[in-house]
Every structure is written in C-alpha cells, then in structure tokens.
Amino acid sequence: MAVVTATAALYPVTTQHWIWLGLLVLASTVHLEAARGMERLREIAAEGAPYNHLQTVWFFAAILLLPPPLICLLFVVSYIYNWFRVYRRRALVHRKIFSAATVVLASAAAYAVLAAVYPTHSEPFATALDSPRGLAAVVAAGALYRLVNYGLVVFVIVATNPDQPPRMALGHASDQLMIAGAIGLGGGIAVMVAAHPWWTPLLVVTVFSLHTGLLMPQFRDASRSDAKTGLFDSVFWAKLVSDEMDRARRLDGTLGVLLLDLDHFKRVNDRYGHLAGDAVLRAVADAIKHSVRGHDMVGRYGGEEFSVVMPGLDAADVTVTAERIRAAVASLKVTTTDLDGVERVISGLTASVGAAIFPGHGEDRTTVLLAADAALYEAKAAGRDRTRVAGTAPRDGTASNVVPLPKQSAGPQQGTVRPFPTARVPQD
Image (cartoon, rainbow, N blue to C red; front, side, top):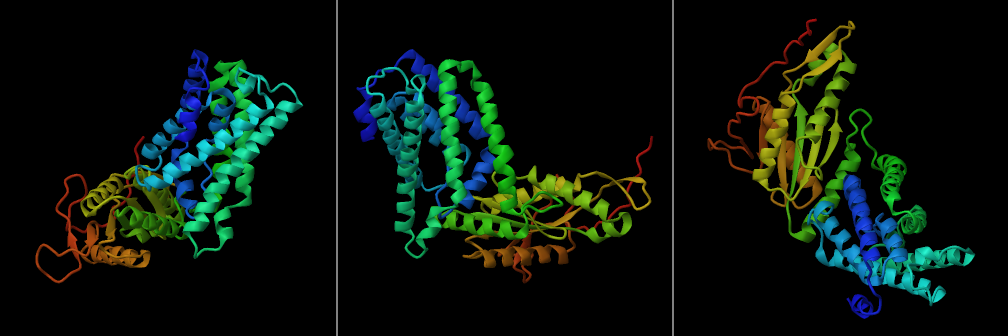
C-alpha cells in the first residue's frame, strides 16, 4: 500500500498506458483460464515450498511498460481472478495478501533498477532497451525481482515451519530456471507490445503453448498418472488427499472422498478380453471426470476401483455427486472389439460407491479412506449398484455403519442386482 500511495502522484498515466494495461490484463486472464486446472495442481503440490507463479511473464512485462500504479492494478486483477478461478476461495486470505505484497515489493525493486539506469527516460522502459546497457538493466532488474519475491517467501516459510529442514522451503533448482525463462519472455513481450501491440494474441498463444507443452509433461510425470486411464495413480492421489486435508484443517472446511468399484468387471475381461476391459476403464474414467467439478481430483485406486476427492463438500453434496457418477456409468455404451475381432457395444455397467467426509468420519487420511472403503463394501454386500455413506444410521434401524440412499430416478434402480448383459452387435 505504501508503494502504491508513494508512486501514484509521481508517474502520469496516459491513454497508451491504459491500452497496454488492458492488453496485459486480457493476456494474463486468457493464459490463466486456459491453464487453471494445471495451476490448481501445481499450487497444491507446492505446499510447504515457494509456489512459482507463471503469471510472472505478464508481471515483468508490465514493469517494462507501465507506471507503478498500473503495475499494481494488474497484480490486483490477477490475484482476484486467481482467488475465484484457481483457488476457488479455498485458501488462506492472509497468505494470498502476503504473496501479492511480495510481488509488489519485487516489482518496485525491479522498477528502481531500471529507473536508475535510465533516470531521464520518460517513455516506458521497453522503448529504451536498444543497447547492451538495456540488456544488462533487464537482467539486473529481473534478478532483483526474483531475489526479493523468492527471499521473502522462503523466509516466511522457514519461520512458520520450524519443524521442517530449511532446505525444504527452497523448492527445486529447476524452479529458478522456470522463473528466469518467464522473466526473459516477459521482457521480450514488453518490447514487442511497445512496438507492435497487435502481436499480443500471438504472444499469448506462444506463452500458453510453452506453458503446456513443456510444463505439462513434466508435471504429468511428477504426478505419476495411471497409464491406462490418464487419472492420478493411487500414490499421488493419496498425497493430494493429504494436502487437501491439511488445507481443510486450516480453513475449518470439509472434504468428501468417494471410492467407486465397477460391479462384475471380471465378466468384461472374461467375455470380451482385457483390451475391451481397458476400453471400459477409460470410458468410466472419462464419465467420472465429467460428473465432478473441475477442481475435484479423480484417481484410479487399483484394478477397477476409482477414487475422487472433493474439497468443500458435505455429506449431502457428496451423495448427489456419487449418484450423478453412477448414472453416468450406467448410461455408458462402450464400442470395442472382442476376442474374435467382432465389434461389440458394452452397456449395462453399474458401480458401487462408498463415501466418507472429513472431518466427520475421521481426522486423518487413513481413517477417512477406511471409512469410505467400509461403506463401499457395505454397498457391494447389500447388492451392488448403489451408494453408501459411512457413519450414518440406517433408515430401517438395523445395525450398520452406513445408510442406503433413496431411490434415484436418474440412475439405476436401488436395491436391485443386475447381471452384466450380453453386448449388443451394431447392425449395418
């Protein structure tokens, strides 16, 4: 706030500045919206270490193009957008305010370096970078920007986590290269926007392509995705549960967990072959992903079992989601080829689902997963093709730790056991 107040009256804001601000806001918003799913996972995975905000590309471009008040305005817009679209309002407010403050201070330091190199330059710095001195100024400004932002974040992480080794707060060495690349690209974007602003759409595409083309494969490898379905594997999914559980504790929130098992899946493999079974698993994985929110995390728990972690949901919301998933699975028609090379359409799939809620069904990951697993086994023992929620009293008063859901018109009938049907052969 002090930086904004001190600079507001010192730097005139022109119409050209507002145009450049509009271009940068649009570019950063499109970039963030296109990559927000991955940014959400990066933000969760970075818990306990500095989270490298890839909006640095646009932030550093703003330092070279805009006066300080408009630079801060870009930060405000970006962080508010992040709050609603990436963090989904599920983050500690004081952390995000501190993070934004470090970026403001880092930008002020970088701007001071450029102002010292070009003390009489009244135009945006991007228009003065036409010599080796300009390159040196950008390198020095970028280095100080990173030092201030990174140093403040690391200091606070170490100070608030005295039980962890300080080196854990440093993050990965590759993170420094990632931010260095973002700063360099931001400098190039600023120069290009100052000279040819209509190139901005192409620059946004370039940044997003580099972001997804280089970072996504690296992050996918780090997350150990399941090879058959593309979902998170059980190990990484369990880590996400722990991370989200820690977040829910800090926010005094809730967390829903679903364990889903395909009924009689062995019949698919035995009747049509394992390739057909793999096609069914992929179709079910897609059906689950399209039945949950964008920031819910779906994993393959093992075999024909799937798992979902849903931040911020209570028991009622979780049961609605579970029933939506069951209905989606029941409506699947999977076209595949059987052992004899004949095209088949596999339909009539059903699923049993067990659900549990943190903290109502447990205070740690193991307890909550055990509760969901017990509910899943209860659903299968009761006849399959249904959902059970752990830790609630049954409607009929019998001894049980789960309760059947009411009959759902959108999904398969409750209380029935449907044998896996014979696949239908499409007619010409």
